[in-house]
Length: 328
Image 1: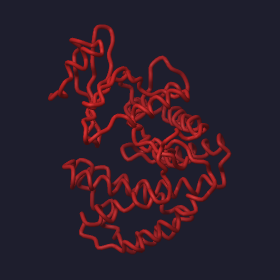
Image 2: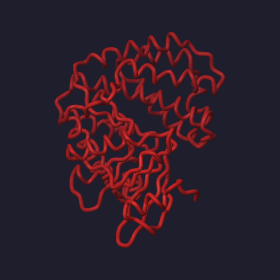
Image 3: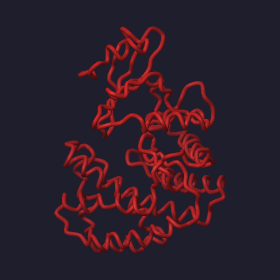
Image 4: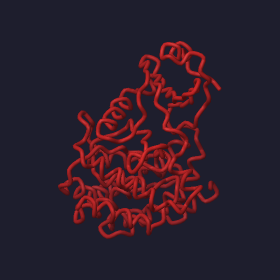
């Protein structure tokens, strides 16, 4: 275990001198996490080393989320020059493992996760967030022809790809639904069950430093079409209906949901290949069959015919989920 430079001084200055340090699981970025254990208390250290990482967006979003009544880690201490943050510890009970251990709670907990978004979307976007709209959606989608297609030796119609996506996403960008704070990585491994809390406040949030101001359907698609966990289609349908009933956004919201779910899943197909090819993380290949299953489900929805036709013309069936089956 290689500890961050200057950690002893940082802990001493923060009132945690002599605390024990244990590694925690990291993520797809340069960030690392450690549990800091003192006498009768514990915290989490985020190591976000500059210039690769900047913890200031995380701090700003965490404080804003707390201000609107949601649960995010409290910022206990910071050293921005070294990229070190000491955070309140939300515990070990992630939504993912909780459901693995007790599948009977699936509807209950996904309804809480959906209600959290209803509460979040009741607030205007956090001030200062960059937009997440049509231009950003289209740029993100280029990860598929830039990384996925070359990895499988496919020569695809890039102009037709962008045109097809523009045809289905431009109406979403102009559907009249007010922008919200989009966490952008809202899924079962970034949601914690916080002991001693009830209702939506029972859920704690992680990994939101890339938040933008965008469409309310994006994060719902993120949690219900999870790259790392199977969510039954019937439960997805029930939670989509639950969100629509709670917000009253029936006419515009559902078409946007399927279009943005397809956009997100296509982007992730490219992201996971990039993590493999560029960043030396081949284990992300194992998620590709699930991503294809989700994308195929999205493309079957009404209104996505232009994109579905592009995939049918450019990506052979055996270069979809089957191409990654040996990576499971």
